[in-house]
Image 1: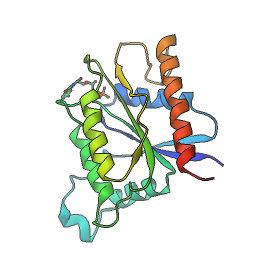
Image 2: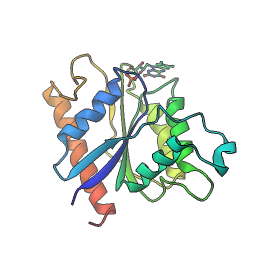
Image 3: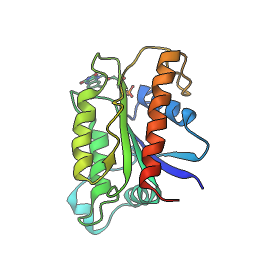
Length: 184
Ligand code: FNR
């Protein structure tokens, strides 16, 4: 039976490097792992006023999280933190009070940026929020990937051997982590 992974990419950009990285991870994964990219772009800006009656996009979003066995977050860094669209999605998934859809899942975080720190600060902020939301995150390897043009194609093919090995190592660790938390 397959492990269903809900993937959240913290960029809405059409040619997002992080979306390409997410594709690369899915391509390197074992056949018993199935990945679904969550739609965070159609979520409105969260307001507590919605708690009494969530819009359909948010209901659907929460249902897809709850249906997943585990989580994967692939995010850019915006101004030394996670992008607002990602924080907005985390907030939607966490509400209404007492109905945190993220809670109790296992997961992992990775990201890429052209900057030298490779999303390290964004990921640390994201880990902080996910810890509060009761997501059990893989600690190692840390995946701060400096983007270099052509190394990961838009379709998720990895053209550099060292990068592919590094990503494959992460994927093995991630799969073991998920299997440790999910009984099938
Ligand atoms: C950035 N970028 C950026 N990069 C970084 O390494 N650290 C940072 O703090 C920031 N800050 C930042 C703020 C804003 C508003 C933008 C638009 C961009 C650059 C960023 O890494 C780059 O645009 C990536 O291409 C974004 O990821 P995607 O969309 O390609 O996945």
